[in-house]
Image (cartoon, rainbow, N blue to C red; front, top):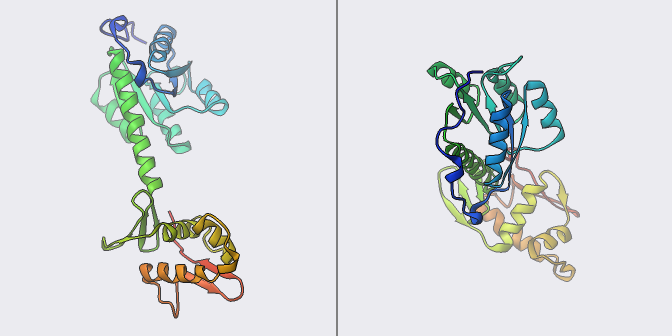
Length: 253
């Protein structure tokens, strides 16, 4: 490793707003012990709890033993280099990767990003910028995951669980009542399983109303109508005579 100091600027002058501290776990993979120790100490000020390791073998061991939100990965390492480890990480998980290097060749940066790194920083760097980049990566990843959770696709439909709307393939927006939304949510959680009226009522109404179990039929009928599911030959919500209903969507994700 070159002897170039990893940081430029005076880290001690950074002011931290305690209200904005992050509860994040970072794995730092760098064979330069002083750099690792400086990063671990500095990141801790921002609520980023960092663990440092020297090489790929130690990185794999750490990932087996603990959960991390981000990997800060140096390019120049003993044994396997950072590009090789980046490739391995991307085949094994979707954990965000921020690569560090003292080499400034554009090809290294391009290859690292093509292999799946989320960001790339050259040494020397401002430590506060490293924190900002980690925060930006994690915010983007968390926003993406929230977006994935809030939009569930099935067949030719998309359900927005935040707005409680059905959206058709051609962009038509279909609002749902609270009960219709809860009923559809239960179907999406348990596809291709026969669910009794009692089970569906518990989920759709939040309580069991055995004396009025036929009310679920009206709710199913309304949901079928909004899904464009032919009541005489339904393809999505099928009636299982004497037992209940079965949600038969084939492409849920």
